[in-house]
Image (cartoon, rainbow, N blue to C red; front, side, top):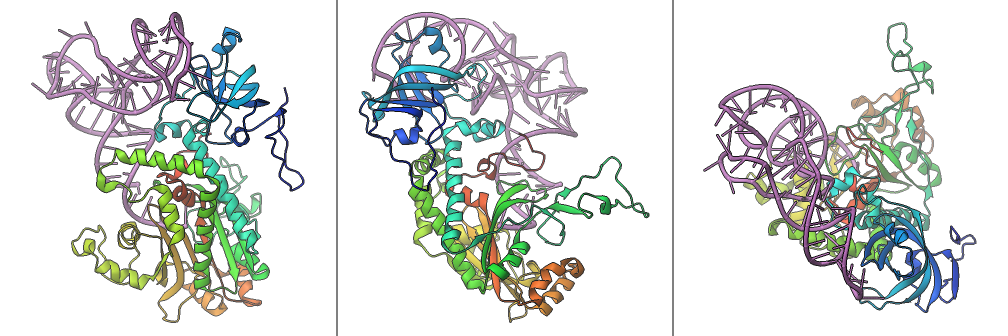
Length: 500
RNA sequence: GCCUCUUUAGCUCAGUUGGUUAGAGCGUCGGACUGUUAAUCCGCAGGUCCUUGGUUCGAGCCCAAGAAGAGGCGCCA
C-alpha cells in the first residue's frame, strides 16, 4: 500500500488522473468525484461515516463535504474484518471506480482490498450518524472536525484566509509579520496578557518592593499583542501598502458569541490614503473574499445554507432571516455598502420608531453618545438592511491615533457594521501631523516617552495614511452563517476555557 | 463583570398538582435481513434526575447556596 500522494512542486497543477487505468497512490475523494468512472483501480483512505446493510461504507477523507460510497461484497471478506468497519474508523481501500447502481450518488467503488488503519470503538466514540447540538460538539472540539458542519466551516475558513492573501497580493500589498510579543503597553486596545519568564512564586523585587521587570526575559515588562496596527504604520510609511494577518490577544472578560480572547485580525495600512480610500479598500476586500468563497466552496456553502434553513424552521416567523445565507452573500456583493456619518446616524436613530416609543434600552438624545449594539443593529438590520459604513465619530469616543477633522470635534474614523455580526471592521485615517498627535496623546494620557519609535514616523517624512482592522473570525461568522464565534475557530479561547 | 434561561440514559428530549418501580427517539450491544442513502425489523442493557444543604410522612418537581452551559448587555474585531 502506498501512503501519501503526489504534490504540486513546479507551480504547474498535477495532471488529472481520470484516465489512468491503475492509480497506486491514495487519491483524495474530492478528486475522485471529478473522475469519469470506468472501472479504474484506485486507492482511498479515510474515515467511515456509516456502514449500511453490511455492504455500503460511506467514506469521508475531509477533502470534500461529500462521502464516497464503497461497496463490499460481504461474502468475500472476513466477518471479523467487517465488524471493525465502525463509525469513525480509519480505513484504506483498493477497488474499482464504477457508475453507481444506486440513485444517491453518481459513482461508487467496488472494494477488492480493505485494511483497517485505526479502529474506533463504537461504544465510546461520541459522534453518531445523526444531528448533534453545536454545544455538545463544542465540548468535543478535538473531534468536531469529523462532522459535516465543521468540515464545511474549516474548509471555508481556509478559503477566506487564502482569498485575503490573494486580494492583497494582487493589489500590490506586502505581508508584514507584526510581533506577537510587544513591549509597548500603550496601544490602547484593551486589557493585555502579560508575557513573563519570571518565577511568579518569588519574583525579583526592586528596592521599593515592586516586581522588577528589568530582570525579566526581555529586560522590561512585555505583553501579547492587542493589535499590529502601530507596527504596520511604520512599515506602510516605507513600503506604501502593507497588511498584517496574525493572532491577537485580548484579556477582556468578554462573554459573548462575538468575542474571543485569541483571535486573528487583518490590518492593512496604506500610505498616501485618506478615509474614503480606506472605505473603498475595505469594501473591495470584503466583496472579493465573499465572491471567492461563492466560487470555490459551493457545496460547503449549500450545506451550511440548508442547515440554517432547517434551524430557522424551529424559530418563530419574526425571528427568521429574511434571506438565506447564499442570498445574503450575493446581496452583499451586488450592493454598495451604505455610507453615512455618525452625525447622520444619530439623526436617523433619534427620529426612529423604537427611539420615539422608548424601545431602546439606551435612548438616543444627544450628539456625542457612543452607539450601543441595539442602535447598530437597528441601522443595519432594520433601517438600511445592508452593510453600513459609519464614519466621522466624535473624537472623545475614539482612539488617540485617529486623524482630527477640521470641525474640531470629530475624527476620520470608520466602522463597518454587518447584519448579525455588528462591527466587523474598525479603521481610520491616521493623524499624521506631529503636533496634533502629541497634543491628543497628552490629553488622553498616553506616555509620549514610550512612543518615540511611533512618533518618529511623524517627524521623518510623515504623510497621510489610513488603515483598518478586520476581525477574521467575524468575517468567517458572516460567510458561514454561524451564530457563535467559538464555532468558527478550531480551538476557541475565552474566559475560563483553554481546553485542548 | 451584570441580567435572564437551562442542567434528567452515550446524544436529543418528555416527565401532570410534590405521591408506588423516572420514560421516548436515536446510538451501543445481541439477533434477523441484505442495493442501502442518518437502511429497516425484533430484543437486551443502560440513570449520583449537576452538586451541597433545607422544607416535607414523601422531592426529578418546592426553597437556598454553589458549579457548568446558553442567550442578552458592556468592552471590541
